[in-house]
Image 1: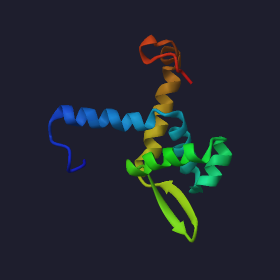
Image 2: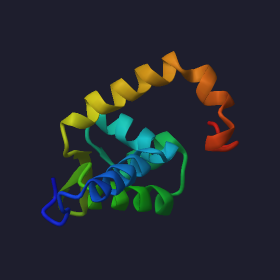
Image 3: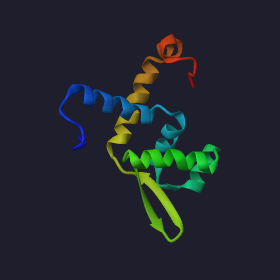
Length: 116
């Protein structure tokens, strides 16, 4: 746990909610899934996800700041990789639960119409 968090439950609750907010974006989740396969450059992610370089770079900046991914520079080339090994288990658990509950997730009016 970060040293900036107090032991107060609401602080941990807010931090946990922000943690899941990082994972709630479909593009960031797709980036993580690709990086779980192998390290990649921004160009590879842009080509695979068919998004603009600025969009991918912004998502990578978020993932890096939140310590989900790390970088390695070789000359002008920057390669991104998963920093936190627990990401794989977390995504696999979330996917398993989503499959089990997909009908309810798809029809829950409280999470909005932006179901992907």
